[in-house]
Amino acid sequence: MRGGVAGALGLAAAPLLAACGSSKSGSGSGGGGVKNITMWGSFNGDQVKQINTQLAAFNNSQTAVHVTYQAQDIVETKLLTAIASGTNIPDVVLWDRYQTSLYAPKGALSAVDDLIARDKVDTADFFPAPYGEMTVGGKQYGLPMLVDNRSLVYNKTMLDKAGIKPPTTWEELATAAQVLTRRDGGKLKVAGFALDDPGLFNVWILQAGGQMLSADKKSTAFNSPAGQAVLSFWDDLLHNKKVYELGFAQGVDGFGTGQIAMKYDGPWNMPQYDKISGFEYGVVPPPAGLGGRGAITGGFGLVIPAQAKHRDAAWEFVKWWTTVPANGVAFAKIGSWLPGSVKASQDPYFGSGHWPAFVQTEGFAVVRPNVPGYSDVEGKALEPQLQNWMSGKTDAASALKNAASQGDQLLAKGV
Image 1 (cartoon, one colour):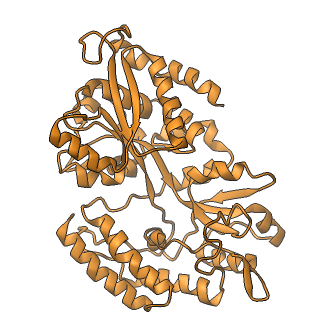
Image 2 (tube, rainbow, N blue to C red):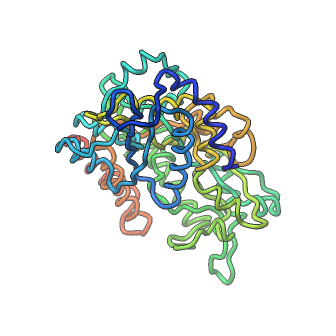
């Protein structure tokens, strides 16, 4: 599969850069020479190999631009430092789209509206929510490259043996999880459903018909009947149906080892399950709750920093990756991510295996609120309170009330 990536990408991308063609001799800053540009990103380890495979395809597809990847810790902070000093500024960044609303106002990113208009980029081809996540103050600060979401992953063998169909509603999820849970002498051996990530509350409240923030995004909205319905459902799973225990299968992949029957997970983990001999699993969209379907999409985009020395060359690379469907498909085969392009997601490659569910979920998934301070609302206010509730240190009403109070203060600060 990987052996054919470079060839496929080169054929797809060659026309894009024809106008920039030049000899590969010459310096990175020479008027007629190849432009040597640098890409920063947080991908490391095996992910560096994935990025470099994609970059090799781009570099071999044309003679005008050559991209080199540099893995960075805390990309956003280092970018601000580089811009402030005016030195070592990368030309393009593998960017956590969620950070756009915070760093665009700081002057870290270059708006690309002029380039989009000049090259007549079909912005309607991008999944709307991820594209909008890179829009701040009416300006576009990049294009979606990779998208993801968490859908319901299930042990097919277990469900088939129990005669259970993959759940499509909360009620079906609770029933299936209870049936699939197995204990031996009172000790949990198989958890019917992994309820181990309070950070997914933002998904559950959508399914309950609620929202994390008010319509004007100036205050929290999760201390609501919908928020209470989420914790009531979690309480039923944990304490009445007892389908999971906190800390169960901690430190191991409980799903891959058969200790967990169902869980929420993303496409990035599917390759490791594919490698397990005899392991059969399936994926369906998240079950609908009292308010219907709900999911959150995350992922990465490509941005051009403010003061980048080779803005036009960087843009050609951004276009190559994000606007040519074949290139997005090729990286999906390398790294198990969905491309940000709708056309790319309609490729036959995504029509089998675990992909159809993730593609379907992406069609209705939304992004987290795109306002400064929101990440702290979840990470510093809500999640600690939910952890306190799950461990029995506080009651549900107090957890939501306290989290909302703290969250409102964080939103007011807007940092």
